[in-house]
Image 1 (cartoon, rainbow, N blue to C red):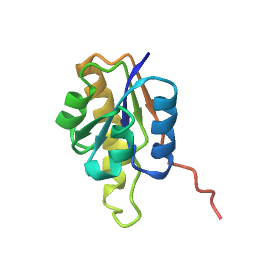
Image 2 (cartoon, rainbow, N blue to C red; image 1 turned 45 degrees about the horizontal axis):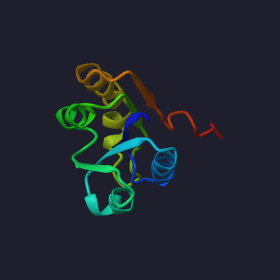
Image 3 (cartoon, rainbow, N blue to C red; image 1 turned 135 degrees about the vertical axis):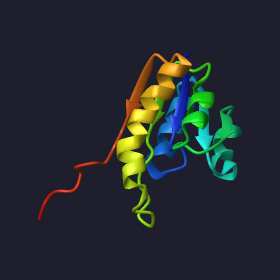
Image 4 (cartoon, helix red, strand yellow; image 1 turned 30 degrees about the vertical axis):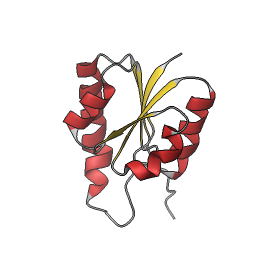
Length: 118
């Protein structure tokens, strides 16, 4: 049974991934800004940690004791200033946090380049 930290668990894709992880019998920890949005995971046995996935200390602390991190965080349409924070600074910070926490693997999923040029 793997111990997994999932970032972006309350988003469209993240919700499905979280439930699949739990369906597989794995230990799931989610880092969320709003714990009410993660209530469905908590009742299924997931550990809910409140914090910001773009905060290095929050991610490092949440990653302690996990083996794997899956990041599905994305830029919100109404917050274009977060583009660099999510797609440039985010992966760098995620790697550093994973290393500091002794995590074995990181999966980072991004939508960069997913829009075709007209």
